[in-house]
Image (tube, rainbow, N blue to C red; front, side):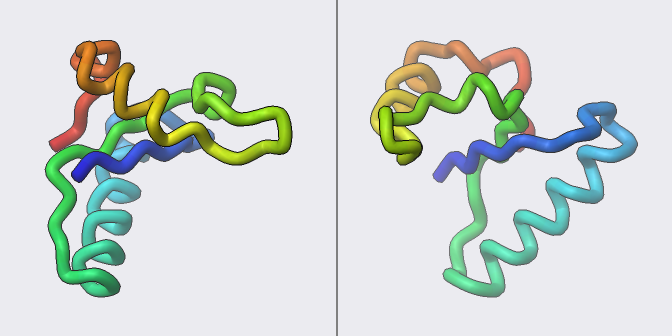
Length: 73
């Protein structure tokens, strides 16, 4: 499972606690530990004309290795 999220502060000192909090929340709510937590700029998340997130497009980009340099496991 890969979770994409945007954060206002992207330095490691700010991201690490946020990643731990996201991971803990996901584990507590659905019982799954995400393989990847991927911080991306808000404007890079593809959306439809009516504002829905294009999950399939994110998946394609992930599988193509576009986020390899920013993966947070």
